[in-house]
Image (cartoon, rainbow, N blue to C red):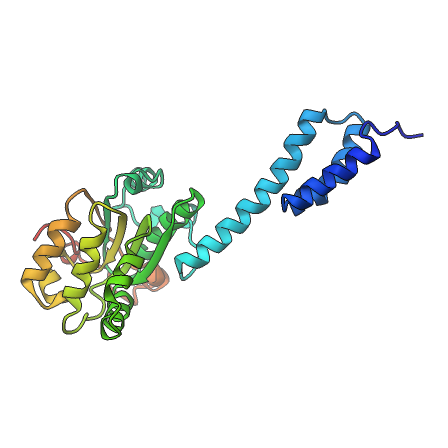
Length: 270
């Protein structure tokens, strides 16, 4: 014969109503099993409360992270544990893990990840973005071309200021693929407006395959490039990945493609 219930029926009913009113469906779902564990003496009342709240918190946190990752527009989910540091020995793993502590977000710094295609720049940027989302930070990611196109469209529609405010309100803005595609006429000026709005107001991560000395060519204007770098190199962390493409590692082993020459790596000052 089972032990008599230690929680009166009317009390149980009130708890259920409270959980419904507080919109705690996971705790409501776990209530009956938790009561059974109390009756069997497996947990104390205090432990049971912790269990119910823990179940609800875990469910809500998972839902929050899922929605925040979607809002962040990350093209895929990457993690630091999934990055092959052994393939890129030029990259200081400890510096990357230090960035994952997100102090650069609190300090509103800019992190530059530079290197040839396939060296994992976007992987690292996304992984840091995931860490920021899990820590409750708002994140938004887009390629440079996407950002400039969206601002150009907003300018035509007379809502450029609103677009810049929208993009600069995130805790962390990730700008991917700088140098891969030309930004077109006026693109540099549009991007400068965004960078100026973000400067010392939010953190940024930039990935690119070309050095800072080539930004005048990328943005089509030496004055704009200098103004951009003046802000983006202040309070900045720069990491140069001098390595080969991870996507081509099998062909490298087979000798079908040549290894990158370190002398051609991007980075450095202007």
